[in-house]
Image 1 (cartoon, helix red, strand yellow):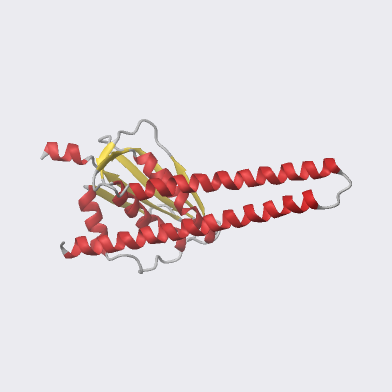
Image 2 (cartoon, rainbow, N blue to C red; image 1 turned 135 degrees about the horizontal axis):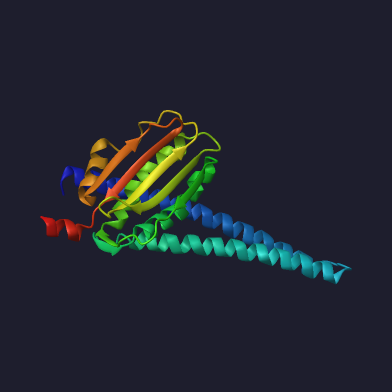
Length: 229
């Protein structure tokens, strides 16, 4: 394994560990709330309440909250499961929207920690591509995480998918709000270069508008690229 490939592999493992750790914390939060609500129901049912209707109403409200938490945990579990399986093969057929949707779910905790809104807009009828979905998610993370960390409270990061001029899927990563200088603590430039090289991708940066920083990432279908060659 060459040095760039080795470094990229190590960085991806670190990225996956960070995602899993964040998801684990979220699961713990959901379980703690569910446990608290369950205890409250138990107290209501075993307490000496004169008004049975009031107890039933309160239990119904609590149950709704438990269901909401359970649903959020289920969405997170599904996204984490798909995230893990995207690395089963180096190359596979997938849809850009699916990869971005899962990443949005898994990055919500990081955004909420910085009081940043993390949103997505999904293009319609985007072609399926044959490429490396795990590597794509990693590259999108490399671009998104520093924006989340550098934005001031109340800022917003939006990931938008669309079809480019040649119909290749594009992901636009836009940060809106006051940003501090992006810290130089991320992967070395050769990691970005290696990611783009393996994805056969292109990346551009637009800072023309004040308080807006925008990346546009496009990738090719490797099957089409090989046919051209």
